[in-house]
Every structure is written in structure tokens, then in C-alpha cells.
Length: 168
Length: 168
DNA sequence: TTCGGCGATGTTATAAGATAACGCCATGAC
DNA sequence: GTCATGGCGTTATCTTATAACATCGCCGAA
Image 1 (cartoon, rainbow over the protein chains, first blue to last red):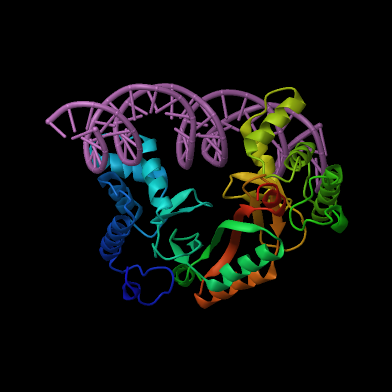
Image 2 (tube, rainbow over the protein chains, first blue to last red):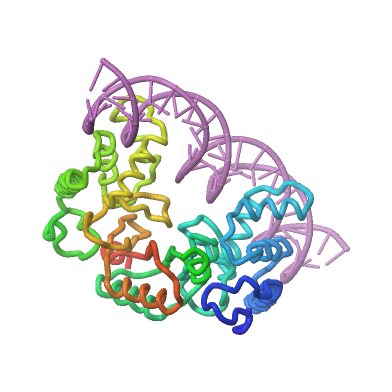
């Protein structure tokens, strides 16, 4: 996903954007990152990653499972998907949205970032953001209280620009 | 929970603090708030609230269910607990921790706040914070992107002061 | 080449979290 | 007293996630 593939709306991709490009791009970067790290992006894991990238909406593990079963032509066990997702999350290729029990492709794998999301309750899209002010504010308050941060989670529910325009 | 019932450690209550006081206080404030609002804090709901306040650790609905069943001396249905929790969350007396699928008593019911938590992965305690900088940062970035916020969720996982001291 | 080891995957079963549909009953308004 | 409303009980079911164990296949060492 290059900068200009989501030209105008800001965080949440346009309806009309070239999503095939998003997918291809995500897979390419995953290949590169895993090669670099010596991590094994197996066929299964790669396919799960592709299915996570089906859209910019967070997807449940069982939705991915269904797709996978269909593609394979045979029933796949939940664990298969969960294991692949676990790997992808560890590698930073996928994020888990805690408030939705769902998974979404990472917009900037490789970069250090903390997993902040704007989640539209109307269209279901989720946009990853990485705002230094939020990160800093969390860091500051944690430091003030002697709390050692390992994993900050920020998930902001609300309504995206597009959906506000549609139902004013 | 008055200011001095958690004297020194900051966000996460001391091990030695007077927790009975926390519970009594929480129930009193719940009574007052519900009376003020004309909301019905029934015996069941009040008991669930009390069970949520068992400790400062977020508790799962099924843990509460077990306690409740034991108290009542008969099996209670999950729905009973979920309905009570739904009421309590609506009234702002209890928060749901999305990243844990668990519930915790609100430290400042009645006040406007957005549900920010420091969650210790070692001892399991969770401290509610309401930092204006975090709130402001979220508000700013949302405004910049035309995103209308309805429910911000901030859950910071990490290690609290006490647990850092114990395992340095 | 063969062997051994380790990580990935398959299989089966089950735990944990949450909700739907329906009906009864207590409470408060009139 | 009657009625409407909301709270609660019961049963069934759905979604999400993990445990335990077996097998497969790749890769390096002998």
C-alpha cells in the first residue's frame, strides 16, 4: 500500500481504491520481511495473510476459516487458522483488534508502532494510525506512575467521514 | 474509594489497602447514582456489582457467574449475569476490558471519563486512569481526520510498580 | 544417504465467552 | 383491580479460542 493508493479520505481507504494493489503489496512486504528475519512464511500462513487482507474491515478468525476451507475444498480446523494468525501477529504483519475479536492486516509492518485504530461502527472499516501524541501521552503517564508498558492498545470506535456524509 | 484509601502506589491499589472499604464505597455510590437517575439497582444487579468489586482485577463473566451461583445455592444462567453486567456498564458503574473479555468496577462513576486502563500482566490488577492528555490526543487526531468518536478504548498492558520491584 | 530433531500442520475434543427466543412474574401507574 | 413495563428464569445455541496428541516434512549433521 503506497502512500497514493489511498489518496484523499485520510485514514480509511476510499471505497474505490485499488484493493488488489493493497493485497499484492502486503504479500510482497511480508515475503521480504520474513526472508530478512528467517521467519517461515509458509503457503498456509501466506494464504491466511491474504484472507486477512480481503478488505480493510477486521475479520474474525472463523470468517477466515470459512474462506480457507472453501479454497482448500475441505474443512479446516480452527486451530490451523489461529496458529497462522498467531505467527502473523508475532511478526507484526497482522494486528488483533481486541474490542472486536478480529484481525486486520498491518499497514506498516516492519516499522515500530503501537497499534492504534479508528474503527467505524457503521461501515466496519478500521484504519490504523500511529500518532506520536497518543504514544507520547501513554508513555508519559506510564512513566509518571512507574508503570512499565509492554503493549498499548488504542481502539477508537466512532464514525468515519464517509459514513457521516451518508447519514447526516 | 476515597483519595486516601490508596495512599502511595499511584494507580494500582496497595496490596494492604482496605478493600472492604472499596466495596462498600462502590455500592454506596451506586445506590446514590441509581436513585438519582431513577435506574433500578435491583438486588441481583447490586450483588453482581459487589462481585465485580471482589478485587481490583478484572473478572470474567463466568467467574462472577460461579460466585453468584454459589451464593444463591443454585445454578444461575450466564444470561442473568450478562444482563446485570450490561445494566452496570450502561450506568457507568462497571467497565468492560476489551482485551481481557473481563469486567471491572469503575473508580469514578458519575464523572465523565473515557475508560483508560493500565493492566498489569503479572499480578492481573488493572488501574483506571483518565488522563486528559490521552483524551486530548485522541480527540485531536480524530478531529484532524474527520472521525467522529463515540467510544475510545485505551488499555495499556505492562507491569505495575509492585511487580517490577518483586522481579527486577 | 540416512538419521535425528524441530518446527509446521492435522485431528479431535473441549473450554470460555456471549446471545437469541420465549414466557412468567413483580412492580408501579392509572 | 387491571394493565403495561421491565426484570428475571429457562433452554438452546452461537462465536471465539485452546488443549492434547499424532504426524509430516524440511534441514543439518554424521
